[in-house]
Image (cartoon, rainbow, N blue to C red; front, side, top):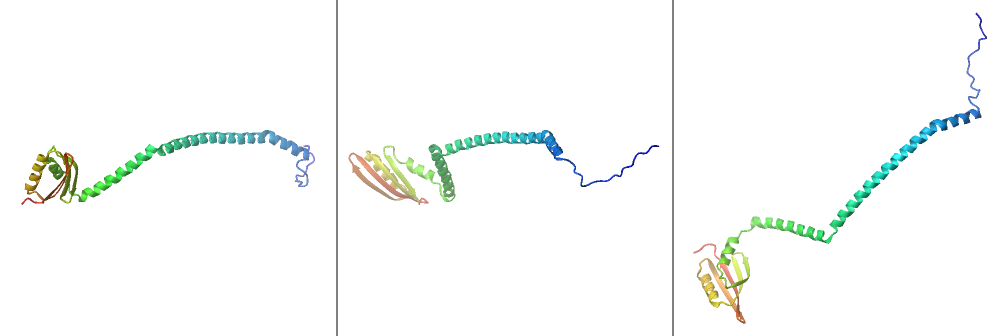
Length: 185
């Protein structure tokens, strides 16, 4: 067999790997292949972010417009007045609940008092406080007024009946005050 010259295998650390020409060539290869692909990936990411930004800005603008219209509705004078009315009604219902718990219901008593007043006597006002009743009347019918006074004074259910009559022109202005007795004697 023929044997050739045997070469020693060694590593020379002083031998340069590439010359300046090979560095330029390698850089050019990298830029044209890997760099181009990397640049395309970066551009795709930028375009996706830009598109997402456009979509999100559109949603933000729509939401802002919707909020502004709702704020405009809330700033409307009729809305403010209705809100105040609603708040007042809520407060009133709360007050009614509080008063109802400790309040004695007197609607039957008041309707009974008003039903005994003759139709020719015009009721101006009625007040009711702790079994004390005050009524203001106007009339031109003295006979009906006299009959009503007699019926109040002769009824044991009422006490301390007081009539105050003043005449203005043809009309009589009458104020009546009496107390409702708890138990008829």
